[in-house]
Image 1 (cartoon, rainbow, N blue to C red):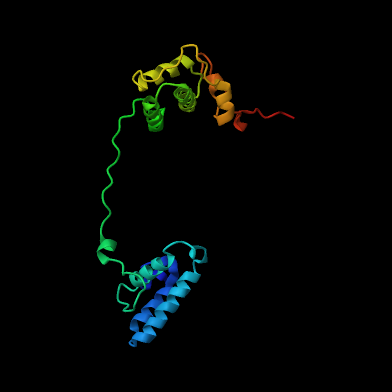
Image 2 (image 1 turned 45 degrees about the vertical axis):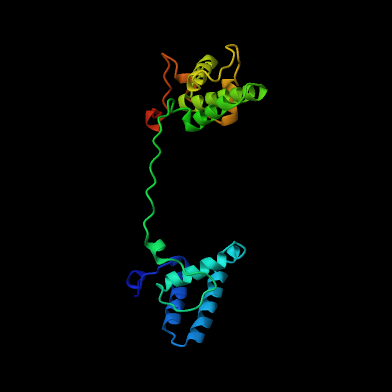
Length: 216
């Protein structure tokens, strides 16, 4: 039995072994005109394998690039597009540095800090006030998702003021979205909420082994 592991390596396996064999055959053709016709025919077959990409810009260019790559650049034919640079194909990708950023309150996340920074830059007015209130409600949602317990609005308002370094503030009597509404709208798992208070333990699930056998 002939296993794929014993067969020649496929450079782009998505096209399959039959396309690879066609390209290898085209490389072996000595007549330049015949080799050009075969190359165009192979491009048409490769395009037929991905009909949903025919309208994608530069799709034909990509097919020709794949043709030369799969031939290991041994196929000598004329292409309507510039040949892909071998150096770019073998070049290692540049190292992407991991973002090093100290998030003060990790349960709020980096996105909230970015929103707060953008809100601080806005001019005072109704738009800034509305944005500040929206951010505070978002912070409360994230807090409940992290802590899954009740949280006082005063704590959220204080955290907002600290994260904005005093740039954003809301009146102390501001009422944020209720905890019940947030839990209902976000679908948070609240099965443990009533058992997180002191002195309360969550009841154990029923176990069939705990049932006493009845005597008959």
